[in-house]
Structure formats: C-alpha cells, structure tokens
Length: 169
Image 1 (tube, rainbow, N blue to C red):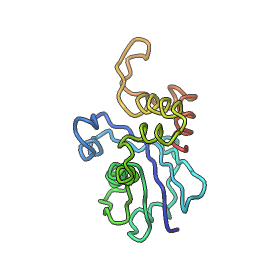
Image 2 (image 1 turned 30 degrees about the horizontal axis):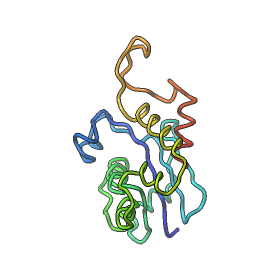
Image 3 (image 1 turned 30 degrees about the vertical axis):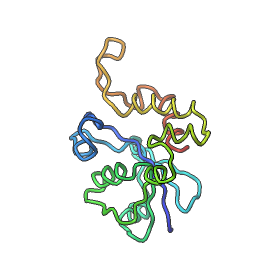
Image 4 (image 1 turned 90 degrees about the vertical axis):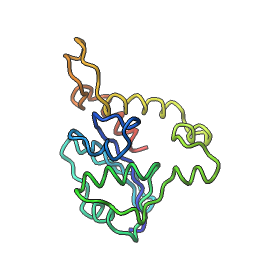
C-alpha cells in the first residue's frame, strides 16, 4: 500500500465552526461514525463503526506510517479526529490535503463549491450536507422526536444507508 484516501463522518456536540477541530475532537461525546477509505485508488470501502465494524489493522497501521500517503479533503480534520480515535497523536508527515491542492489550482475552498466547479452532481452534495446535519450534530428536542438531542442510525435506517453511500462516493 502506497496511498490511502480517507473520508470520515463524526459526531460531537461541540460546534466545530465555533471551537475548532481540537476542541471538537476532544469533546466527551466525540464519536467516529463512518470511516471511508480507498487504498491505491481501489474501490472505496466504508466501515460503519456504529454497527460494531472495525477498521482493518493494516489501515490503522498505515495511519502512523510516514511513507504511506494519507489524503483527504481538509486532512487536518481527519488527522486530528483519527488521532483521538486511535488514542495518540498522528504526525502530519505523509498527510496530503485535497483542499490545499484545490486552493493551489485556484479552485474554491469548500468541497461543495469544488464539486460544482468540476461539474459533480450537486444533488448528492446537498443531500450529504443534510445527512451530516442530521447525524453529526445535536438535534433540538421536540415532541416529534421524543425529546432526543441526537439522531442515531436506528432513528432513520433509510437515511443512514444514504449517509453511508454519501461517505462512499
């Protein structure tokens, strides 16, 4: 394995935009939900950690290997969150950020806008944003949702399957 592309989905009650990734990942309720990855540009696999699935040991080992390129859009977020998940600081050596590459090429800095400029299907991106909001951030307690403050996969199994497909794309 020479390269691994990574996309994660996480939950934290801490507001990422207000606090930054370190405080977000340090939250007591931080959780890695989905781990999407592809090695050496092969097919994308999604590990559903909410269902007890495990990230393969060779992938965990690759996260610490400076000779294996780890790439992600906003790689700093992935690296910090995965550091929390594995229980130690993952060094930035070997991490490549697609967002930085986008900026270098004069593309926008948001994944949604990069997708639009490159002609990717906007519907997928819009649906993904809604699913991220549903599963990755706290929800307001209402009578309709039985006063819960968080949405879990079992609250909307169809949405969860869509979320996994979004992570895989």
